[in-house]
Amino acid sequence: MSSTFSGDETAPFFGFLGAAAALVFSCMGAAYGTAKSGVGVASMGVLGIYGLIIAVIISTGINPKAKSYYLFDGYAHLSSGLSCGLAGLAAGVAIGIVGDAGVRANAQQPKLFVGMILILIFAEALALYGLIVGIILSSRAGQSRAD
Image 1 (cartoon, helix red, strand yellow):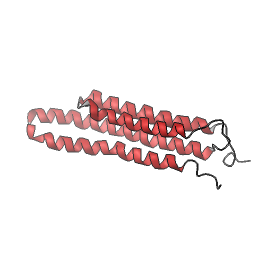
Image 2 (cartoon, rainbow, N blue to C red):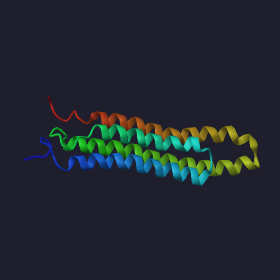
Image 3 (tube, helix red, strand yellow):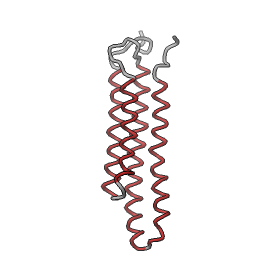
Image 4 (cartoon, rainbow, N blue to C red):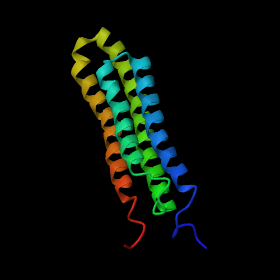
C-alpha cells in the first residue's frame, strides 16, 4: 500500500513546513541584507513579501481534513517554499555583501553609485526567480491524481 495514491497524515506537515520555510528564510535574508548593508529598508522588505506571498499560496492549498491532499502535494508545497525561501536568503546575503562594499566604495568615489545600484538589482533578481519557481511548483500540487 503506497501512501502516494491515498490521503496521508504526514502530507499536511510537509505542506506547512514549506510555507514556514518560505517565510522564515526570506525574512532571514531580508534581515541580513538590512543589517549588513544599511541600504534602503524598502528594497529589503520585498524579500520578506515574496516569502509571504508563497506562504499564503501554500496555506490556501492545504486542507488537512480532506482526503485528497496527497503526499505529492505536500512535497510540491515543501519544494515551493524551500525554493522561494532559500532564494530569498541567498538574495539577502548577496545584497548585504554588495551593499556593504558599495557603500564603502561610494564614499571614496561617488561615480560608482549607478554601478552599485545595478548590481543590487541583479542580486534582487535572485529572489524574484525563486518566487517564480515557487509559484510554478505550488501550482503543480493537486495534479498528482488523474481525475
